[in-house]
Length: 293
Length: 164
Image (spheres, chains in turn red, cyan):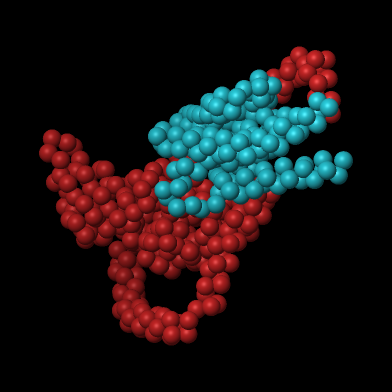
């Protein structure tokens, strides 16, 4: 080994070149961050690099999905029968409610025609699986197993069977990254379903908590009120359930009340979510996304 | 030669494992103390074997980490090359330290790593969580301590081999 040589002879030269390389790479880093932060100039680069790290994501997800598969395939027969019965009941109930839905949607369309307003109730959907990959314990973000190849786009709304889950923030070739509505950097426009009061639901960084910071002390909101998406942000289509008001505290002397809501979707337990394709994708507001990143 | 190649494979696969470990989902309570595996491992390798990995490895690992975690492209990279630069620059001095001081300097480097991430988050206008930054530094230092202590005998052997 030439360890002792390099200490004396090449010493200062090696140090200089080390410092030089460090400065150069630092400059590269800063320019990359700048380009990435402003207008997402590097989405192509990110996409290409994501192909390289895809195997790592798959490898991390593998034990979890293998365990789920194993659990499914060794499920007890009695459990399966019980689950089958339960699902059957749920399906019957859902179909029963769907009967009314058909009539209501036709009626709704007719009324909207009378009002000369557009309506979009049937959106195309794509089922995606959540990969068991933990991005950052302090952010509510997750990775989906659908990417550019499946037509996923930035700003796409994500739902589960209970309600709104989040939106896509970056798309790779075969995966995409999504942010939950409870992420501290996320906000979405909602209306109180009972009376149509518009407000904004802001994430808290705590899964299972949303804040409604812009409701006045006298606003007509009650505990248990359902909040649905208003469609004003042009990311989430209107009318999907978002959260239920959990706590309500009016603060005399302050401009706004303290309102906490609980998301209706099973944010931390979701294995499968739905990506929504609707006509709003044409004019997704670039500003919204830039602010979100 | 084949022995060198073998240990190269070991070192590289340890880095890939570190990448995977940094995105493995863990329970909330433990997540606060999840070490920055890549940073910890790169510091360890550069201190113990400074001629194996350099700044470019750190750069590549940082980019992979950025893409993997969805951070700004260059955020983890900058933090990693800074830390690796420091540990490369001072590896001779650090190696001469007693274990307690090695761990101390590793704590400084890991704290710097977290600070750079924190600082860029702040500049980029993303939400920051200052208190949560302490956990990884502590657990990373503990990991280094364990690695150094368990390696101590092996280290002595290689030293005598180099000197001989």
